[in-house]
Length: 207
Ligand SMILES: C[S@@+](CC[C@H](N)C(=O)[O-])C[C@H]1O[C@@H](n2cnc3c(N)ncnc32)[C@H](O)[C@@H]1O
Image (tube, rainbow, N blue to C red; front, side, top):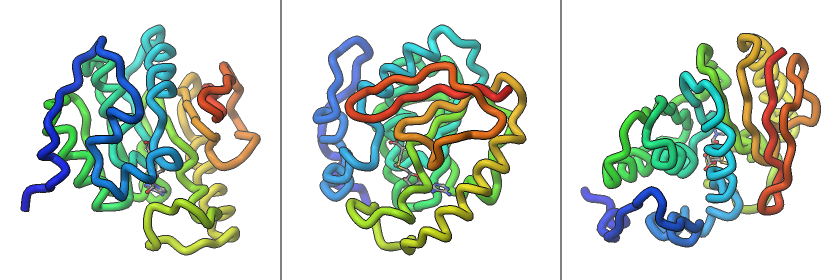
């Protein structure tokens, strides 16, 4: 059955002003309401593109890609000039991401429904995340009830995440918005740290 939210007309044109309100208006209502808490704000994606446009980018991975907002808008800004991979463990979010990608004819993005902690995607030049593990700690604005709340689970996941990140090749970049879950990332140094729309935007480099 066709997703009703896709009936909304509109097209993104690079150069036209974009706002969270416009982008989020293409989402089903439930996911639109979650946007301020769960999906990367447009100014953060624009800042990421400004940073990446001066970088040698082989490929970008969004670890926990949600409804695809970061990947799709980054691909539009970059004119799909590098491959982007969105990894997401919730099937319904992958379906929405793929529908939006098709609707706007965005190229060079792939989605995988996977838990990146189990099968970490090594070999990319740039990684992005918007605090994906924190959801097991948080009481409000959850995406759904599929994951239990447990501080122990959060700490275990964080440990696994760090064990994978430390295996990345030297010079690999990790870009975080609202962090990766911890304050110190062994084996990485901070290249850039800024406050954008009330959250910390940070670029880490593997030493
Ligand atoms: C805060 S949202 C950010 C979504 C997207 N990156 C964005 O910025 O718009 C975090 C996402 O990570 C996903 N996630 C959390 N843990 C994950 C895991 N271990 N594997 C794959 N996805 C995960 C959640 O389902 C959620 O969609």
